[in-house]
Length: 197
Image (tube, rainbow, N blue to C red):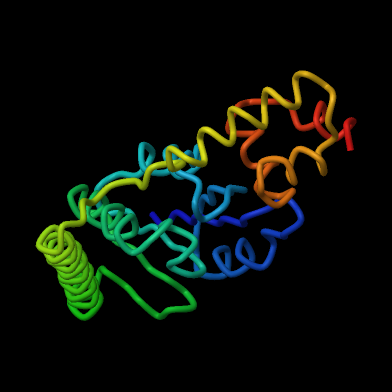
């Protein structure tokens, strides 16, 4: 049995072109979804994966409709293959029920794994080089001690209510934008200090 899966990213987009193509391809059932490519929660895709049986073929208009990324696509294909279910993509002219289609996916999987290994190695080498120069990895400190002291001073000036934002900035020797950053850092509400300008 051929089962179609159609997806659009937003409600403004139309599923008709995909569903027409899937119907013409011989799909007896079509699961329709509205979900962005980055979204992990795809109710209809989950329903499709629980519905399919051995020997079925999942048909999509384009492969990017099925997977959020190459990694996710390969995971879906692996899950379908384990259930002895094939995939056909109308636009990409790919069919995993053929030896050539399976070869394409295996090669893609190898490239994806190779790319992940390269990224891991580059990251590791970069961290080691930074450590050799005395730098530590991780997140930078939010503020220097001097900046933090100025932030405390800025807050106390504001809370006293004697100086406006421009005057406080001049008094502690920072720009108005830096003062705003300090006040946010001290969790002073934006609306509060805007009234004092």
